[in-house]
Image (cartoon, rainbow, N blue to C red; front, side, top):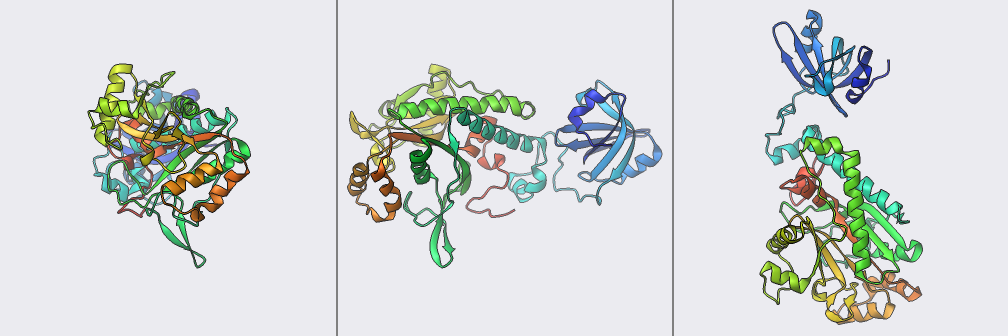
Amino acid sequence: MQRILSSHLPTRVGETVRIAGWVHRRRLLKSVAFLIVRDAAGLTQVVVTDPAVRAAVTALPEETVVEVVGTVTANGTAPAGVEVTHPTVRPLGPAAVPPPFDLYRPALTATLPTQLDHAPVALRHPTRSAALRISAAAVAGFRATLDGRDFVEVHTPKVVATSTESGANVFALDWFGRPAYLAQSPQFYKQLMVGVFERVYEVGPVFRAEPHDTVRHLAQYTSLDVELGFVDDHRDVMAVLRDTLAGMLAEVARRAGGAVATLGLTLPDVPVEIPAVHFTEALRIAGAPADEPDLAPAHERTLSEWARATHGSDFLFVTGYPMAKRPFYTHPDPARPAYSNGFDLLFRGLELVTGGQRLHRHADYLAALAARGEPVEPYAGYVDAFRHGMPPHGGFAIGLERFVARLVGATNVREVTAFPRDLHRLAP
């Protein structure tokens, strides 16, 4: 008899079935025992009246893996309106050692460090696994949206020879006796691949050796990167980002509706046109000094509140960041060269996406590096490609964990990360 999942039981009323999963909860009453079995699809209530089966169930601690064979019976008060009666119960392994928290409770009461120390079992809790299901659906939507627009998925190196893109905050390693570094982003490579496919994207890990110990930073996270050629300016990139976010959220609703319901979420609407303000206007709205070179977290929260109140939007573009705060490959605004054709996207009070138009002429790269007093040699393999013809292009990157954390209302990005890596954590 083939095993079926709990979600299939409502269509099998009156049939004898085989289910298998983890002992989620046991309720031992005087004349009957209820065994709640958890599988990947949900929960099944098993009703035990036979004394011998009851004795076996009594000896099975929570999280023990079991197989149950019984009859599917309608019961409006049971999960999904059905339960399994007249069962036989067989352990598929030794009795489990219960974890240091109760997974059957509606919420995990253990502290976040305790949950992370015991992540392999903490992630079994429906609220923790729901966030990961939403993450998987968001990535599926990211890929599907871009595939539908003729983007090509690429895979770029995560070990690189230089640490030059973002300064010294890199993880160094030994590469067969030569110094190497974990990549901080696929930025250079995805630009170069525009010269091959015109439109590319990547889903992959990035590594930042920044000594942040905050609720919004990780030393390793998943970056959703996009780059596209033949753009007029950064607004073309913003339009693709808008459609990508809409596709991600649509796929979350389609694929992870159960997880959304488990967490009691209302998914945000992505406006047909996300409101946008120039950096100089953003400073005024946020009440920041006019000479402020960047937006602080408090400014981002104020701007998001303004976007919600003024435009009814959970999203807000801030464009035209000062060139002094943007990487050397950023294209300046031709009308205001001190400002960039770059943007950030704020989502519910937090910067979620950074993007913009890039330089595409070799001479402009040489000038940009010279203006910053940086030598060309460390970038030679990257800059040289622009001698051979590159179209106007731009792109963006979405931090997956940060997106999911804001979507589900998590107070700490580690709550939506399976096995986070940060300043203090390298295990499990």
